[in-house]
Image (cartoon, rainbow, N blue to C red):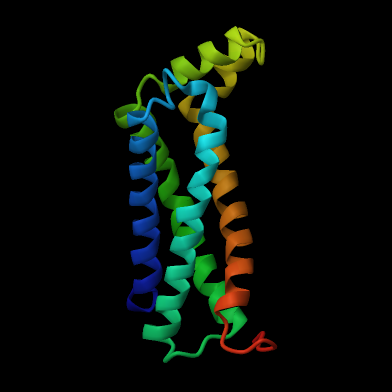
Length: 163
């Protein structure tokens, strides 16, 4: 476990950030009175998400690898964080929509139907915990690995140092 201490730490930081982000969205009304802006605002979570991966890889490089990191070491670090996050995010999703913003699915369904974006059945099938947890289980590894692949390029010690 100590080999993955940095990765576990940053995965937990990421999970807490996501809970904080959901609380912020809810508090600012993006889950109810400003739900029409939610689809835009929620994308800004990419900024702290990427920053967390950058800080995680920088810490791994500095503390665990003596200041030198190859691309593959950076990618492996991000991969481990992503695997841990993929396991954690369904719980984060459940906590978010059960405790932080329990009316989100109802509000989102009503908005989508009222705007003619979806039928009632489509909205019911899409806006629920099961659907969102499935999206999380797919989206987390895809976005995590994409972020890792890019961030590791910039964190590696030498330009051509891939291994």
